[in-house]
Length: 460
Ligand SMILES: *Cc1c(COP(=O)(O)O)cnc(C)c1O
Image (cartoon, rainbow, N blue to C red):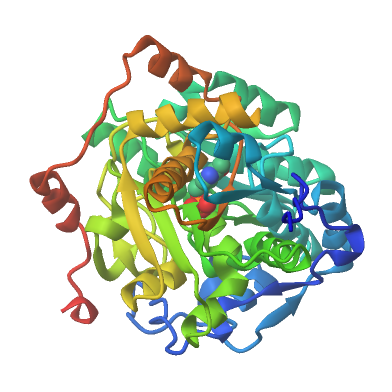
C-alpha cells in the first residue's frame, strides 16, 4: 500500500496556538547555578534584577517552578498576526539531495524583522509598558533583534534606542533605515554617547564592535535614564521562555501529522531560537523517553559550546551584567567580523549550557563558506533566502541527509529556520564573488578571551 503523502505545509489553526510559554527551568533535573550579583557574589534577587529589567521579566527570569506560564491576551492578539508559523516539509530539498531522509523546517522568518526575535520583543515591550515605562534601550548584532523591538515598541507606542554593532551597521545600512522607519534611534557601537563606549574606543579605535560591547552601552544608558529599562534579545532565560512558542507549535504540528522526529537541529548564538525550539521536547529527553537527538550548531569562528569554558562570566564586555554560569569564550573575546552577526556572542544561555554540560544535547561547529554553500542550495530548492545564522543549521541538516543517502536511513530531521537573509546581501555577494574567508581562532586567541573570565572563588 502506498504511503500517505504528507502535505508540504504542516499547518496549524489559530485555535491550536499554545496559550502558555513552556519553562524548561521547571523540569531540569538539576537547576542551573544561579546568577550572581557581581558585587556581592550572592545569588541575584528579584530586587537585583529589577535594577535593570522590568519586574515581570525579572520574575520570569527567576521562575524555576512553573512549567507553564500563561501568555497574556494582548500578546496572544499580536502572536495571532504572525503565528502559527508554518512547519514545512522540504520535499524539494530532499529530492535535490536524493536522500531518503525526511526534512522539515519551522519557518520563523515570515515577519518584517525576518526572524524569531519578534516572539520575545513583543512580550518584553508589553511588560515594560504595563509597568509604566516610557522608553527602552537595547543592542543589536545582525539587526534582527533591533528591528523586532522597533516593531514592538512602535506597536505599543514606546521610545527605543538601539546600539547596533558597528560592523553590522556598516554591512547593513538598510536595517538601520527599517528600524528608523519604526521610530527607533539607532547608534553604531562602540560610540561616544556612553562612558564605556568611549573607553573601548580609546583602547581600540578600529574595533568592529561586538554584541558584548553594545550590551554595555545600552545598559549604561538605561541605568541613567528615568523610566527607561534595558531589554535583551537572547541569552537570558526569560527570552528562551518566550521563544518556547516555536517548539510548542512544532511539537503540536508533528503530533497532528503523525511525524516522530529522530533529530532536532538549530543554530545557537545566545541560545534563544534553539532553546525555544527544543523547550517542549526536553522533558522526554531528560526522562529517557525520547528517541530523538538534539543538536545545536555554532560557527567555528565563535565556538562557545564546543571550545568554551563552563564558568561564571559577565554577559557583556563592560562587566555590568550579573554573573551567569555558562559556556563562555570570555567577556573580552572579540569574534572576527564574519557574516553570522547573530551568532557572534561570546557565551551561551545558562539553560542551554547546563543541558549541554549534562549531556542532554550535542553541539557541532561549521565554517562560514560551507554554510553559504548550503544556504544557496536551500535558496534554490526551497525558495527562501535563508539568514546566515539559520544556514548553519541547513549545513548540518544537508550533511545528515547525505549520510542517510549512504545508509538508506529514513531519518526524520526537523530544524528551525530562524530567519531570512534579505539584509545579508553583502555576505551573499562575497560568497558569490569568492572573496569570503573562513577564520578559526587559534588556541592562543581563545586563551586571551579566557583570561577575561572573572577570577572568583566560584570559578575555582
Ligand atoms: C539572532 C538570531 C539568531 C541567533 O540568536 P539566538 O538567540 O541564538 O537564537 C539566529 N538566527 C537568526 C535569524 C537571528 O536573528
